[in-house]
Length: 421
Image (cartoon, rainbow, N blue to C red; front, side):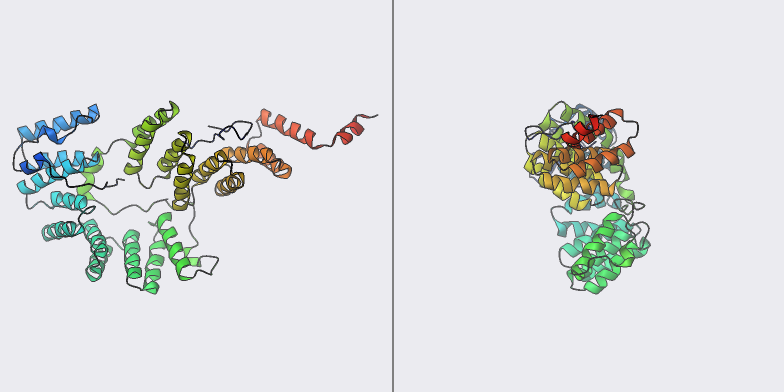
């Protein structure tokens, strides 16, 4: 949505942002159905009544498949559906049953490890060890095991596990990044920098790896104003996020993930209808589904602003801009919030960064024009008019506005002289 033509302290500057897999923290609650994992049925009370109707139907189909054919695959399939919809206690129950029925199948034990990792690292490592005793061929297992070992301080084992993952994945940038972080944890800053440089040199590395390298370099050389030449290729040809390692045992979960586009459209509709609480919940769901998607975080912050929580929205957008420093829309959205809070100097800086990142960003230029007009910064107004007219040469209304602006800049006496014969 484009901002209004006038800007006042009593109105909100309206420049709204246009509208994977992440594990949520779970609590292993002691509930009545937990002890019934030895049955060949899925207790109906596992699932609450407030689930979406379509999800209820899918769960019921899964339960019926289990009743007809109570195999590890049928229990595991229902568990994958539960993971995809953040029903992690229920998913663990299903995977536990699947692993009992098929104790030599590493897939279900791996699923248990991924769930356990958020709440019990020691237990997760035990699961990963069990998986590797059955199958060494998946590099992602070595990678996640290495991360878990590092977090509990078992650095030597962590390094060996990550090195194995690196050898199997042709030194995947994410593995090298984790090895670099591990070296830093052990005080080896030189070794850490060498590894992150190697990660950056890989064309699979996204901007997230480049940003990590720049942070590490700045930490090592805080007085240097520029990055080393080997880090200077952070350009738009790189993807924003480094692709993850292959996860063959997670493909079933990925197939069952809710359609992110549908969630985003629904959230946008709710926001437009000013159903802010429901819209925030939908965007929070989208953020869990795509935690490295700046658009979901940005839209969430804009809804917060419109719901009356502008300061909270600004705090969220500051984090988004820090995490996604190459996202022009993020800076433009932050400028919108800052203008709403009447912090126009900060808003100008945010919008200027947006147009620096994306010189043809028309809405950000229009926002700057409005603020410059409000702040009576005539030279900047003139420059923004010229920029916008270069971007929008067919915009007759804009051309007329510029003509009025130019006319108003001419002193009255000069206009009188021009009228005299």
